[in-house]
Length: 264
Image (spheres, rainbow, N blue to C red):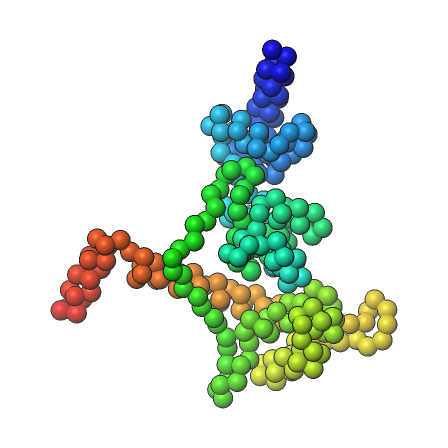
């Protein structure tokens, strides 16, 4: 009797806090659910269970699994940390991703998951299902060349700029990326030569002012390349599904449409 009464009391406290913390849409934000669990010293799954009984949906996943939350730019060094916890399908446990946020913040984790295409599995709130892998998937790779076919900009140079921006040093960036200093330096020189723009400033000597700082144009290039790559991937994925993953009925309709178009 005592245990049952205690459980009912805890349920009432959880429901009371859920009602109090509902967002303007009448939903419970992911972060609020974790705060309730921490305040009452219970597993966050219990908060999720009570919310479900009340017909309250979870909103604004702090790891960005629902979209809609502000993202910055992912960090290469954070990605390498997360990669140590991913499985063979490039997925990370929700709990591990949240734990990693303790040192860098949820916004950085959210951005890094998005930029480096890391999926989250086994949500502690049970509010999104693990993504099922397709039998087939399309892959794309985007790079920019000059008229002579020389590689100017792509994934590698983006990472070089990104890590330099993060650590403020070409030599440290080269070490993190596993390349020698000369190769890292050459990446920068090729970029500047073809774009005819200064992309960074370097100050020699010791002290806090020493090191390499990217200018605004470098950050614009990083963001522009990632946006281009994401747009291409989104289009390719959509077109791939249309062409390869249609149901039989849809395929037949599409074939008829193509045939009719040719007759016109």
